[in-house]
Length: 68
Image (cartoon, rainbow, N blue to C red; front, top):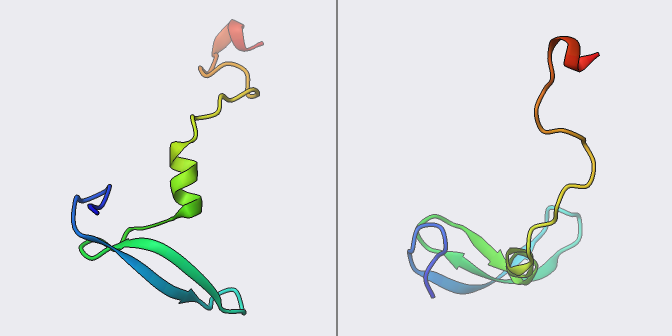
């Protein structure tokens, strides 16, 4: 498999994550060149369509009389 970021060699990697206090298995693809990791959750989120922002109003800042 090729890396999505650098097109380098990606290998299937079984590693352990210990930064949370308890070790848990992680099964993911890891790039040998750049180190990018893609697991099941990352892959699923990349496949999902982007969500629209529903709040925040106008994208453009208003100045002068329009801001009042």
